[in-house]
Length: 317
Image (cartoon, rainbow, N blue to C red; front, side):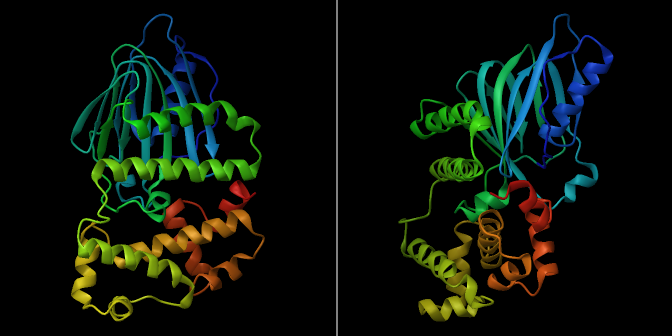
């Protein structure tokens, strides 16, 4: 699922064709490329607003009856993937992601990645909800396994789910008054909570076996050595006195690779320095072992959909 940044949308009376078109366009802007079929009914005053939390996006929906289906087309090969957290507040909504069907009702939280033709959502009557859209790269860099499920359906009575539900609500109301440094701290908190929920639901490999313990050691070693130059499988094997085959087996626990993990950690470090320092992009590229600023630009754009300079201009503190 790939989402684009949305502007804030005020209340729209979708009785008229013009406002209805604006509403459908706003839905596509927040949820990604999709076909939207609005079910015209009298009195369908609606509201869709979105606010940025750094490169995350919060949206507040008061949604009329509609049917929407992802229209991937050429976007199927888009390099930036997003993960969407949907928190139901009131009403009824039916979601379909990655072959999983879910009902969103009061208190339900759905974590969805999607990415298949036919994914989307249906609102039979009306629904109030909030959505949080996060770049997959941000979750991977924060320790989320690469094989994030296509759809997780979670009830609010789960303690950590309730914490995320309440946090989203609080962030939405307090975000307009936040300073840039507070927004950055809030971004980190939302990423950490989302990663925690996914890992708690899918099960962390930590502590399950000697191989899982090795994987944790490998992750720590990579983090400590990111600025030392290129990292190869042979380096990991030598540092931990095991074979390269054992290293590959350790990564197979979470469905990712050493290359993907190193890339995610380096990009996360770059993002931190873009936001929190005034170092030049060339200096940052050198510090984190990119060949040159052009190499960094390509890698950063692949993960976040914008160049490093554009990201700094939009999200720098």
